[in-house]
Length: 60
Image 1 (cartoon, rainbow, N blue to C red):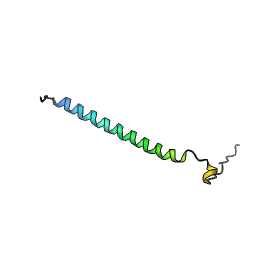
Image 2 (cartoon, rainbow, N blue to C red; image 1 turned 180 degrees about the vertical axis):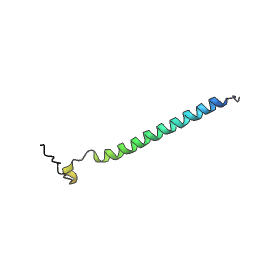
Image 3 (cartoon, one colour; image 1 turned 135 degrees about the vertical axis):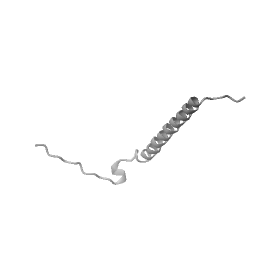
C-alpha cells in the first residue's frame, strides 16, 4: 500500500534526516578524539620523557 505524502511532510522528513546525519557526524568526531586521548591518558610525562618548564610570570 502506498501512502500519499504532501510536500510539507516530505520537506520536514528530509530536514529531520539531515539533522540526524549532522548529529551523528558530530558524535563520531567526538568519539574519534576521545580514542586519541585514551592513547595518551595513562602515561605520565616522566614515563614518556617530556619535561615542560613552568611559565613564571612575576607579579608586580
